[in-house]
Picture 1: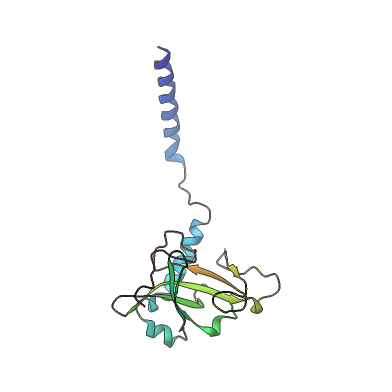
Picture 2: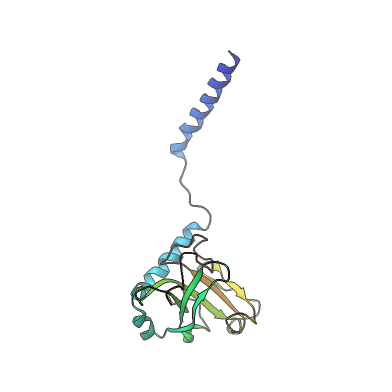
Length: 177
C-alpha cells in the first residue's frame, strides 16, 4: 500500500509538471542565437566564393602559407588573405581570410573564414570582437611568422564537431594539396 501511495504521488507530480510544459517558452542557449547570426552573415557575405577561388582572387584574396594542418588533429585549409583588410576594421561581411579545402579533383571548396587584425592596428588594451564574439590573441613568435594579432575562425561552410569558432576542424583535410 505504501509503495502504491508513493507511485501515485510520483505520477501526480509528473502530470502536474507536464501540464506546465505547454506554457513554457522554448529558449535558445545563451549566445546560440548570436552564433547563428554571425554564421548566417558570413554565409551571405561569402556565397560568391564557395566554389570559385578565382572570384576570391579578383576581390583581392591570395593564398598564404599553403594548407595549414593541426599538429595532432584536424586542419584549417588554405587561407586566402586580403592584405588590405589586415589593419581593420573588423566587419563581419568582409573577412580578412577565406579558407579553402583542397579537393581530390584539384578544385578548392570554401569551408570557412578567419577574421584577423594585427595588434599594431588597435588601440592599447583593445579586445576586438566580431558581432560580440571575442577574438583570440596570438603572440609572436608564432608558427605563421606574423607579428602579434587577434583572430576568429568561423566555420560557415563546413561543420566543425568542436564548434563553429574553434581553430582546428576535424572535418577539413590537407590530404589533397
